[in-house]
Length: 330
Image 1 (spheres, rainbow, N blue to C red):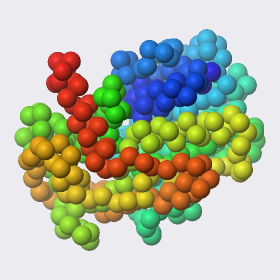
Image 2 (tube, rainbow, N blue to C red):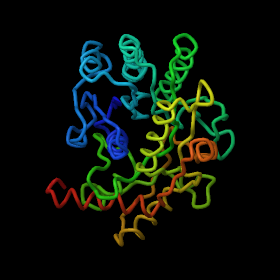
Image 3 (cartoon, rainbow, N blue to C red):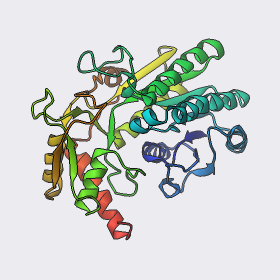
Image 4 (cartoon, one colour):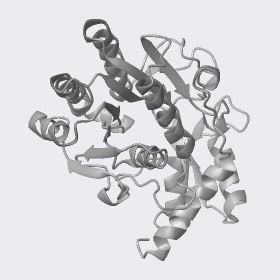
């Protein structure tokens, strides 16, 4: 049994689906603050639980007796983390300590962690590999780095077997449109593009076109959520099969290709045939100019590689929007 903490969220629900498709028995625990109960595959058991409520965690472990955990349960709004750092350190860091305490109580010593490229901060060189210095510039990134360090210490002290996946900008939806990306509040670029197309936003704002990039807009590494989910499946299998080569293993999960905001908008128009209304405004405080991954280590060591193209990713997001319309949700 694999326990998916935060399995009702965007990346968690996609990973759950792929684990089930690969034959793993899974259970999901989520507090549903940001997750969606309807996103949980019906093949999996579900229990409402909160990282900050140890008794609810004990109930989950007592009920499902998991062999390993995949940990997605974290708050992940960068801007909010700056405004309310206590919320992020309390939930992400203290909550993870609670999870680790309960794991130890139930003799569970295997975990795959959803980390982030935000632990790197401003790039000192590109593309970013796993040896790049980690100097996060916001509480969200710092909370994730703290958790990585906690895992290292728990490995030394208690023999915790863990893999951290530092991924870049998750995007897209399942190819069949069954599950997708939905955040409240919405801050991610592709869903905002969809909201503009759907008439929920008058325009998409492009924050700055005066950066030192080919078209002046920020550059990011957009990794398809399906590729991302597959990386988690490989990681949990690696731990379960005792195939780790190092006590501490960390992998960048990205495409290795930087895509600008304007390039993404143009790609959306090409993939869907829909003309998008966008507005160029001033730079947004805290935005990094350009960042993309060097995924070579994951490619060679995990045998994982991003296969979905940007057009695939954008088309899948559009398909998800159309499915919502069919169901009368949008």
